[in-house]
Every structure is written in C-alpha cells, then in structure tokens.
Figure 1 (cartoon, helix red, strand yellow):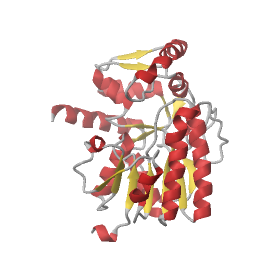
Figure 2 (cartoon, helix red, strand yellow):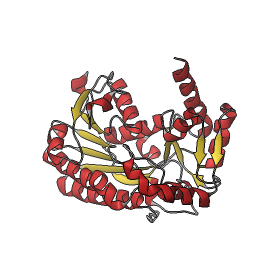
Figure 3 (tube, one colour):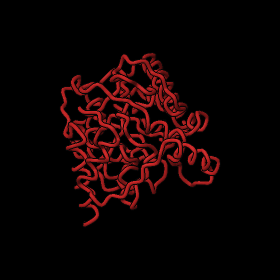
Figure 4 (cartoon, helix red, strand yellow):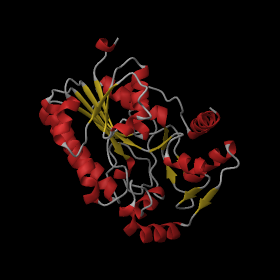
Length: 322
C-alpha cells in the first residue's frame, strides 16, 4: 500500500496541527515521514504507521536527509508565538527557505505551507485572496514575507507551491481548551470582534488535500460561519456549563502582558502571554466562506462552531474518562 502513495514529509509533526495531519495521513494509507526536532517530541505520534526523522529547521544540513526521496512537503514547523521579528526569523523565514532549498535539490514536486490570517490587520469586510495584507504584528509580517519568498523560490525551482492562511484552529489540545482543562480560561478582551475558526480535523483535511491535488496559490481559509469570540465561548459554555472564564478588559491585558514580557526569556518554552497575542485576539478578521474548499471539491465536516465545539468537548470528555 505504501508504494502506491506519494511520500509526504510533515514538518512540525508533533505539534497541535502536525499531529492531526500525521494521524490522518497514516489513516489514509500513507506512510508519511514525520519530522521532529527531539526524540521526546514524538510521544503523541509514536504509534502511527510512519517513518520518523530527526531534523531542525535551523540546521540546514539536517534537512537534506529529511527531504530525500520525498514527493510532497506539508510544512507546519515553526515557532508559533507572537514575539519579535528577529526572534522569529531563524525559525520561520530562514528555516522555511532552507527547507525549500533542500526540497528543490531533492526534486520535491509539491510544497504546502501553513500560513496565518494574521498577515491581515483589523478588517471591516470579509477577506479573500485579493485582500491587501496589512499585518500589525511581527508574527504576521514574517509569515507574509515567508510566503512571498517561498513562492518566488518555488517558481524558480519548478516546485508547485500553495499556502493556506489558517484562522483560529481549535481542538481538544489547543491553548483555548488546555486552559479550560486547567480550570480557568483567561480571555484578553471582551470578545465582541468577529474572527474565523476551523476545527482541527478540517484543518488537516484541507492541508492534505492541497498536497494531494497540487494546490497552487495563496489564500485564507476557514469554516462557513465566522463568529465572535463571545459566541464561541457561549457555545462552549452551552455544552460545558461549569467552565470558568475570566474576560479581562483589553487595556488591562495589554498592561499585564507588557509587564511580564521582559521575563519571558526565562521560560523553558515559548508562550503566548504577549501584547501581540492580545492585539491579535481583538482583531476583526472574517474569511469569505468556501475559499480553497470549493477549488479542491471538498466540504467541511464541521461547517461551523455549532457542530465543531460539541465534537471537541465530546472528544475531551472521552479523553478524561479513558
């Protein structure tokens, strides 16, 4: 079965989205190559029918073996934090370009890049692929620059390149539900702004379909009904009435995160407790429904948060009781 399927490399395979992409690829009969930085990172995915390779985006030499014999790359590896441009540059921009260079040398056919809606700023209207990018955060700026540079290098090398600008991806293992699991969800704002959401299962499906069909282009994606954070929370509490939530005023969240930012360098792992995270949470970014999905001939498993959130909470409860 493995011989009939293209060889797919997944970077960031042990991350929130990467683990689901890896799981689905394995379930579809692929024998994906899963790239991890450290052996311990494969704990969530060690049971999958897959090949594991240890490599690091900041070490170009390690990427040569990672891409050898690969037909397609689904690139999810990054430092997914709202830090300064120069902190993020080695992991997002330079690492992605090194991966593309190695891919071109190895004659990889297709490269799918996971980008972000945060290449936009606050938008009064629905966004699509023609909406001008106006990032207000360094994270959005470097994602946008990486898109452009990767597209240019792919064109020169004859690699099919597609980038999907992902919205808030939610699932039982995301930060939102991890905070609920810990007992208290702290929201940096009143949540009255509209944002686009996407269930983790559908996120993995669209990334895999882009790889399978050789999607070429750059576009935002999302579910069929953008919703405010307040509405998202209302649906959560409808199915989890005991959820404890603290909604801070935006000014207080900004003040608090600015005060603790100098001390974040002492944390062993990057976090989201930054002014940038607060500003991104309070942006209005609603994606026009159907983008990319229609191009690929796909429909959503969870068209809105009204189907997706209950499914996440059901999975969560099953994890707790198992």
